[in-house]
Length: 136
Image (cartoon, rainbow, N blue to C red):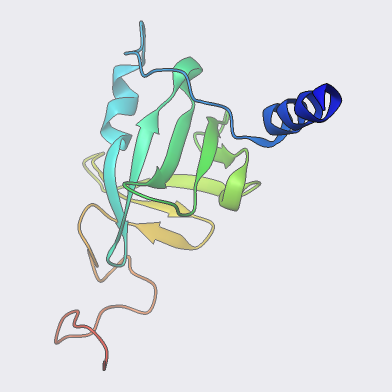
Protein backbone atom coordinates (compact mmCIF):
# COMPACT_ATOMS: atom_id res chain seq x y z
CA UNK A 1 0.00 0.00 0.00
CA UNK A 2 2.88 2.40 0.81
CA UNK A 3 4.35 1.91 -2.69
CA UNK A 4 1.02 2.77 -4.31
CA UNK A 5 0.71 5.97 -2.27
CA UNK A 6 4.27 6.96 -3.17
CA UNK A 7 3.56 6.30 -6.87
CA UNK A 8 0.41 8.41 -6.75
CA UNK A 9 2.27 11.31 -5.14
CA UNK A 10 5.07 11.07 -7.72
CA UNK A 11 2.62 10.95 -10.64
CA UNK A 12 0.69 13.92 -9.25
CA UNK A 13 3.91 15.93 -8.78
CA UNK A 14 5.01 15.15 -12.36
CA UNK A 15 1.73 16.00 -14.08
CA UNK A 16 0.05 18.68 -11.98
CA UNK A 17 0.60 22.23 -13.30
CA UNK A 18 3.20 24.16 -11.36
CA UNK A 19 1.81 26.82 -9.06
CA UNK A 20 3.04 30.15 -10.47
CA UNK A 21 5.27 32.41 -8.45
CA UNK A 22 3.38 35.26 -6.77
CA UNK A 23 3.26 38.47 -8.79
CA UNK A 24 5.93 41.01 -7.94
CA UNK A 25 6.55 44.35 -9.64
CA UNK A 26 9.62 44.52 -11.85
CA UNK A 27 12.71 46.12 -10.34
CA UNK A 28 13.72 47.66 -13.67
CA UNK A 29 12.07 48.04 -17.08
CA UNK A 30 12.36 49.99 -20.29
CA UNK A 31 9.76 52.80 -20.09
CA UNK A 32 9.42 52.73 -23.91
CA UNK A 33 7.91 49.24 -23.64
CA UNK A 34 5.02 50.48 -21.51
CA UNK A 35 3.29 51.89 -24.59
CA UNK A 36 2.93 48.31 -25.84
CA UNK A 37 1.40 46.95 -22.65
CA UNK A 38 -2.25 46.83 -21.71
CA UNK A 39 -5.40 45.74 -23.54
CA UNK A 40 -5.50 45.11 -27.28
CA UNK A 41 -8.29 43.69 -29.44
CA UNK A 42 -8.46 41.22 -32.27
CA UNK A 43 -11.95 41.99 -33.53
CA UNK A 44 -14.03 41.95 -30.34
CA UNK A 45 -11.63 39.60 -28.49
CA UNK A 46 -9.62 41.26 -25.74
CA UNK A 47 -6.01 40.28 -25.01
CA UNK A 48 -3.37 41.84 -22.80
CA UNK A 49 0.26 42.55 -23.49
CA UNK A 50 2.28 42.34 -20.30
CA UNK A 51 5.90 43.21 -19.62
CA UNK A 52 7.90 40.24 -18.32
CA UNK A 53 11.21 40.11 -16.44
CA UNK A 54 14.16 40.57 -18.76
CA UNK A 55 12.25 42.80 -21.19
CA UNK A 56 10.17 40.05 -22.82
CA UNK A 57 6.50 40.62 -23.55
CA UNK A 58 3.65 38.23 -22.91
CA UNK A 59 0.49 38.28 -25.00
CA UNK A 60 -2.52 36.42 -23.65
CA UNK A 61 -6.21 36.64 -22.86
CA UNK A 62 -7.35 39.22 -20.34
CA UNK A 63 -9.33 36.50 -18.58
CA UNK A 64 -9.69 32.76 -18.91
CA UNK A 65 -7.99 30.45 -21.38
CA UNK A 66 -6.97 31.47 -24.88
CA UNK A 67 -4.11 31.98 -27.28
CA UNK A 68 -0.94 33.14 -25.60
CA UNK A 69 2.80 33.47 -26.16
CA UNK A 70 5.93 35.05 -24.80
CA UNK A 71 7.65 37.43 -27.22
CA UNK A 72 11.35 38.34 -27.35
CA UNK A 73 12.72 41.57 -28.83
CA UNK A 74 14.74 41.18 -32.01
CA UNK A 75 17.56 43.47 -33.25
CA UNK A 76 15.41 44.74 -36.14
CA UNK A 77 12.71 46.12 -33.80
CA UNK A 78 10.31 43.20 -34.20
CA UNK A 79 9.35 40.61 -31.58
CA UNK A 80 9.56 36.83 -31.99
CA UNK A 81 6.96 34.47 -30.53
CA UNK A 82 8.82 32.02 -28.29
CA UNK A 83 6.07 29.57 -27.41
CA UNK A 84 2.35 28.91 -27.38
CA UNK A 85 0.04 29.68 -30.28
CA UNK A 86 2.32 32.36 -31.75
CA UNK A 87 5.59 30.39 -31.53
CA UNK A 88 7.85 31.44 -34.39
CA UNK A 89 5.59 34.30 -35.48
CA UNK A 90 6.86 37.87 -35.84
CA UNK A 91 5.13 40.75 -34.10
CA UNK A 92 5.58 44.13 -35.75
CA UNK A 93 4.73 47.34 -33.92
CA UNK A 94 3.12 49.67 -36.47
CA UNK A 95 3.39 53.43 -35.90
CA UNK A 96 1.90 56.44 -37.62
CA UNK A 97 3.92 59.40 -38.96
CA UNK A 98 4.10 60.95 -35.48
CA UNK A 99 5.55 57.74 -33.98
CA UNK A 100 2.39 56.74 -32.10
CA UNK A 101 1.65 53.01 -32.03
CA UNK A 102 -1.47 52.40 -34.14
CA UNK A 103 -1.64 48.61 -34.05
CA UNK A 104 0.27 45.37 -33.65
CA UNK A 105 0.65 42.92 -36.54
CA UNK A 106 1.36 39.40 -35.33
CA UNK A 107 1.56 36.94 -38.21
CA UNK A 108 -1.54 38.41 -39.95
CA UNK A 109 -3.44 38.97 -36.68
CA UNK A 110 -4.02 42.73 -36.32
CA UNK A 111 -4.47 43.97 -32.76
CA UNK A 112 -5.94 47.43 -32.17
CA UNK A 113 -6.62 49.41 -29.00
CA UNK A 114 -10.40 49.29 -29.52
CA UNK A 115 -12.62 46.44 -30.68
CA UNK A 116 -12.69 46.50 -34.47
CA UNK A 117 -10.34 49.46 -34.50
CA UNK A 118 -9.22 51.47 -37.50
CA UNK A 119 -10.81 50.03 -40.69
CA UNK A 120 -7.70 50.98 -42.66
CA UNK A 121 -5.60 48.45 -40.71
CA UNK A 122 -8.24 45.72 -40.25
CA UNK A 123 -7.80 42.97 -42.86
CA UNK A 124 -10.87 43.01 -45.09
CA UNK A 125 -12.02 46.34 -43.65
CA UNK A 126 -15.10 46.79 -41.47
CA UNK A 127 -18.80 46.52 -42.14
CA UNK A 128 -20.05 50.09 -42.61
CA UNK A 129 -23.02 49.26 -40.36
CA UNK A 130 -20.70 48.35 -37.51
CA UNK A 131 -20.23 45.18 -35.50
CA UNK A 132 -23.34 43.27 -34.53
CA UNK A 133 -23.89 39.73 -33.33
CA UNK A 134 -24.79 37.09 -35.87
CA UNK A 135 -28.08 35.23 -35.99
CA UNK A 136 -28.97 33.25 -32.88
